[in-house]
Image (cartoon, rainbow, N blue to C red):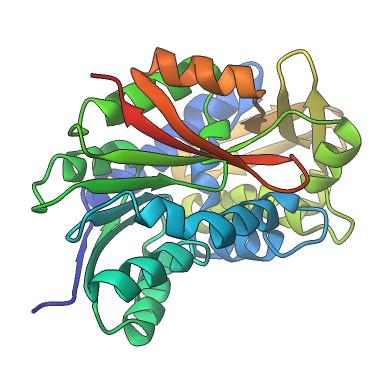
Length: 326
């Protein structure tokens, strides 16, 4: 049996897409850059470091729930289930589910999807070395490019993972729309396991996105470094401090890079010169937080129902098992 296959749909268009989005984002008002471009090789490594920081409670809270409830999740599936993960990253938390499936069934097909090919190759290599009964079909690309693989017949039910509160990077309407597109590709026995961060006090939220060591600041500025590397940009990273604030009304963390001075920046590959006023911000990311009621509303809007919901002991984070509402 071939234990590892990697596919990369749409890879030829990726560089063009990056340049197009940079042009549109930096010539618009207000200026913005899509957060999906954080995750090149360097950005993915920064994020893995963020997940270990004391301020970034999300990873530990989700890990706690999975450690306690992985057996409950696996018990809901018969032998022959396929595990599909959107935004797999290092797959550190997913190991808890992989171990449980393999302990029971001896074999498991795992389909990790990640925008970073290098992170996919690194994480899947480690998994294959660790788990002899694991078969991996890796998809290097964005979520929309991976949806076709949700329709493939793997000969059994699918458990689709969307962990890490990645749903929070979409606004509430976009999140419902994307989850609905996933739901439309689910069979009656399939399930979707979604990690969702909960609303809480800004004194907890803001440090999680603006840590004392400055790793999140480096992660945020890496998008400018990527423009320098790939599009021959001339950004001085020191001139763009990181800012994270909690918008309580919208229930979201907002991340920005703020021009410290009045300046112009050339991006040679795009034949652009971008002016910045002192204090002008580039909006790089939102991270939406949910109440338990809002999670239920999100599920209903997507044509799903909350079958099970688990919280960590601190009540900071939720893991939600969603079933298609037929």
